[in-house]
Length: 381
Image (cartoon, rainbow, N blue to C red; front, side, top):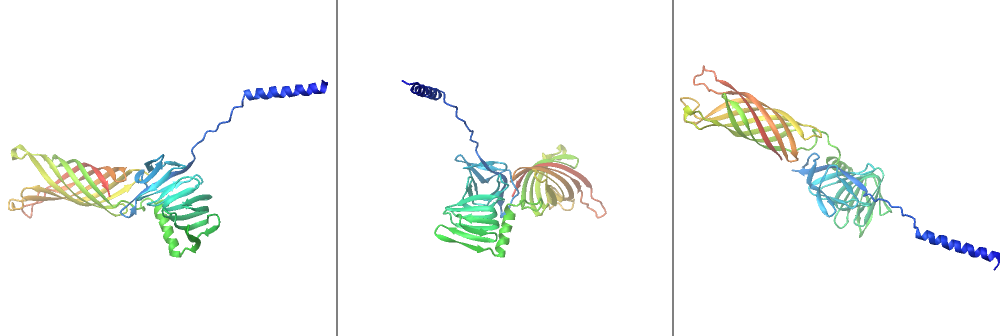
């Protein structure tokens, strides 16, 4: 065997040995941790009550998140990931996207988060400074710096109206700002110009539901029902109090309030009475200010009050059986909202009453002070 052939054989044996050694010590694989992609964050959740929208609320059953097969109440600040969905009943939600875009979900709608976003049913408002992909049925939308309203049914048929930017449908059909298009699998696409009235209605619809509201100008609840208990100091004695109030909003922070109740105190031994009672009836006004972005509110008010006591107003008029005592009160209010439809508050009152209607015209009535404190549960309608 020649030296050349020996060298070749040695190289072959060395290569086989090295390859076996490498096979016995495999290189470790690089591992990557999969982090669920956050697609949207709930920034505004609203209820619709009596035809008008409430302010943003912390939580509501009218807007739900569908997560891992469970339906949960959607709350402000909740983060939604790919594959999760949002469903609305008589409520709305506004979702913030990572690229500073937004999705407004109107009443009776459902959206699945993902790439693309899947609109299952309802009316949604999409707005994005970049590119946003949306699927409704078998129709694909590509929003490019656009704001558009998309309405679809459960079969994927519907309408798209473009307010800003442009939208490409199925990659070939273009809809520009100020135009709309009907989409249906069985019908060809056709772009139609939005009339001036339609554009204004769409802009108003967007503003009412999804744009930030000005404190004091937003739609607010219209009435309160208050049920309270407390104490009053009257006629140099302490009285227990049960009070029922109905508050109607006149406009903004002004309210009309009507109240009725009962005050009780132990009777005097020498008058053979176990309990004294009276019925206070009030008519007045309230000015109530709710703190922005806080569950607290404060207010002041004034009332004309009529106290009805058992007995005769004078020695000559005993047939009535109830003695009315007129008076005037002022009040201060502090409260906290514990739920969109429930609040707790305290009301401090003070004033005077004419407690002795004169038998003679020249006599002057006896004026007595009254102070009281009431704690109430408030049902917001």
